[in-house]
Image (tube, rainbow, N blue to C red; front, side):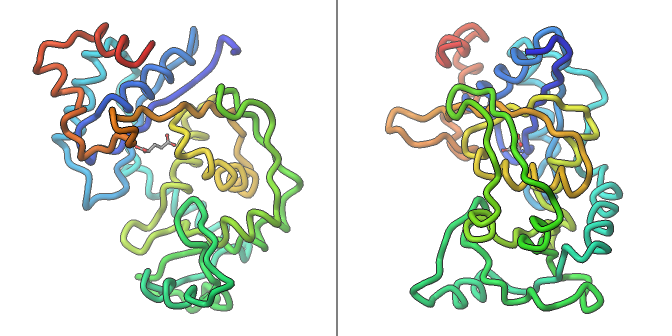
Length: 279
Ligand code: GLU
């Protein structure tokens, strides 16, 4: 781990932080070592994000003993950067407008030979792929033409430092066309997407190691491709295991029983939380 590592914890303020978030934040902070640990608020989903959840995030993280530079970056303030990247990729012929609903996609996939699932769900069948940006309407989603994008970049790889999938991972273009497909880079309701925003923000914040849950490992190939298309530096990655409840189920924000605030209210200390997480 180089001493100048810059890591981040990037929660979405859509509910209370639970044990899994504490785990993620504490790992990010420890991986920063003598470098810097940043907090970023991922609030592009305006319909689901609430200021009171954001306030609770600051409160819970400070209680855990974490500290981070202020002011924090918020994705909702970064729309001009997201739009500029979309314009660039559109000008390079890598995007097309899509107006398929989920139901349209399900119907198009009902043929028995189709139906691969990628990081964002069913692989898009390509219904709108022939449409050009000149035909885009303001409420269309924008998709990345995966085959065209991969044709523009050299063979890509990324380094995973975490214990689950350690080593260098090469991107396999055929597997990405078949198993990831034309992902949405601008959702119709948001004008951007998790993939695009996270890549641009990690670069803008100088993140050198992305630490996050193993549920996002499969999305990393999308991020590495976008970094190459947008000529951004490539961080290394550390994907950690997910904290599960007694039944082995992944914790979700709605599982309020596992909320840090709940443990705090019952008198748990930050040391108790670390012990529960085997940290
Ligand atoms: N905002 C994402 C989440 O809350 C994390 C994204 C990331 O770490 O890349 O799950």
